[in-house]
Image (tube, rainbow, N blue to C red; front, side, top):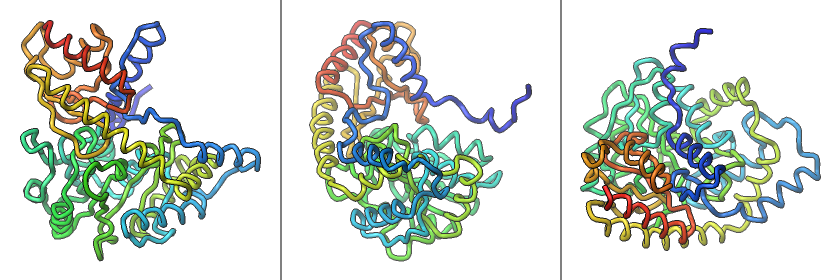
Amino acid sequence: MQLSERIGRISESATMAVTAEAGRLKAEGVDVIAFAAGEPDFPTPTNIKDAAKKALDDNFTRYTPAGGIPALKKAVVEWHAASFGTNYEPSECLITVGGKHAIFNVMAAMIERGDEVALPVPYWVTFYDVVNYHGGSVVRVETTEADEYRLTSDLYAAKLSDKTKIAVVNSPNNPSGAVVDQGEFEKIYEAVVARGGTLMTDECYCKFVYDGKPYSIASLPGAKENVVVVGSLSKTFAMTGWRIGFALGPKPLIKAINNLQSHSTSNPTSIAQKAALAALTGPQEEVDAMLAEYRRRRDYIVPALNAIPGVTCPLPGGAFYAYPNISSTFGKSGIESGLDFATRLLREEHVAVVPGEAFGTENEVRISYAASMDDIKEGVERISRFIQKL
């Protein structure tokens, strides 16, 4: 059997790989502290689960339109409008099988071989592989720990060219938690449009911003024709396993990815769509409660990591990740990279983190603090012990 050349451009998700190994150890009875998966540790809110049960009882178990039920599209655009002041129509919305699906479909519809995609570093793992799969060329927009990985218009403008088809902004950022300043976001948009490109804004963590009000570049007057929003209910509503995402964009793009979806996945799961409808139209207090708890955890774990000799960690402005620099361990006891560090940490102290190489950097690891405070405290103690014994 001969595989296609393009499938060779796709690597296994490092996050999934570390999570799988941690799961294997847990199954063997090992006490693993799981800081790897980007998954809320909260249960899906009751009203959402009840809506799914009702969908089953109502026998809502058949095919739906490929791009999602009309009621859910309407709910997405109304929720987005209430959250950010945008004015999308249901015809400018598509429901997808999670946020990754939205990203994949948009890239499939837009990227030709040789097109450039500007991608801030550190980046979420999937962006890089999906661009490569579709024959695009990743142009790295480097941010630095010294600036807390904050993305600026100057950094972005220096990397744009007439070949730029898509410019990606992920704010709050996975893995760093950095939030793009609204003024800088608008300048980035202007620079992208001036080059004839499209701005893709990944709003997966849009509700988890610790300071200030959440912002969408799609709310900028006149921006809709040059912006595509990709989003997910996974993090906001603790619905990772339900697999519901969405895309908002110009009608020709939405129609194109609807056509693609009709020949690939077809519709997102009918029952999950009804659950998503309840999430978007129901009470939002639990989202606020999750944010408050994530803030409490952030305010513990970042100072605790910075207290470990040789570790430095910027304060994230959103999401639920810490991105500490552990390069002071390189050259000690055979550790030469973030991958070495993460491998040894899991094997010796049973703490699962994701190496920075997965996100395009070399000196860091990603720690998800979507975990209990007890696990966070124990995990930091184990990390500290591991580093100090090298």
